[in-house]
Image 1 (cartoon, rainbow, N blue to C red):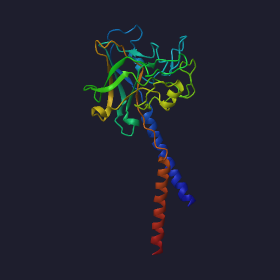
Image 2: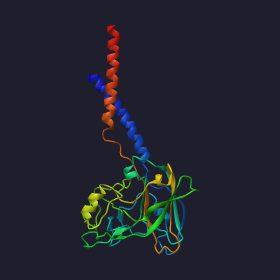
Image 3: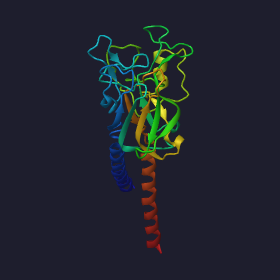
Image 4: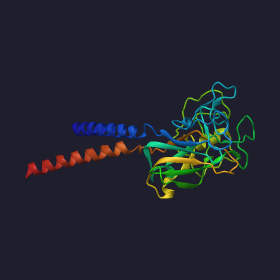
Length: 285
């Protein structure tokens, strides 16, 4: 029996290793990979017209050379010219993912894509970090559009590009305006519960509610009837009165169930045992 378990364990470990490697490869680059086009539009400040800043991981620590820099929190957003790009009125920003973002019903709350701006909450107890009631969000909107082929784009209703939920760089943050980085990076591929309301909550309560997430505006691509998308476009209509600032884009990942390996082991052992019993039955005839 020890040999059966040992072989099953080895088989499971091999299969789990292959699965883990595959999952890692699929999730190795969850961020936007290329800028397809950028039209600055009106109202863009000098230096904030660099679209490449929207690629890769969103900002965890903003403006380290500035006296006002520090770890990014829902009260202290990224503000460096090398961290965010502005989409002025009449402008647009289009990025591409090399690996398509899938409409996966297993994703938390059905959210498949996250868009990171530089929104932040008004601190009712500055500098201690407590959201007002109701929560007041400094945000600049922006329309999110998605496309599978880069030609036909579909508008995501009810979700602003530069809006809820403000970015959180570290999950062990205890201050609203920290000057040093945390030691537990948040997960930029994990969404916040869309029903979350920060009204009256302290920075600690907000961090707890994020539950490891790095924030971001959540998008369900299935809401526009698409099974996958490779292009995301942020537009800002003329006359909007705002200038969205975009920090990044992320494909939501689905964590593997903790019981997966145990289930695989059980199947392998049962299969081995059934074959052994069948062989014993045939030999006794």
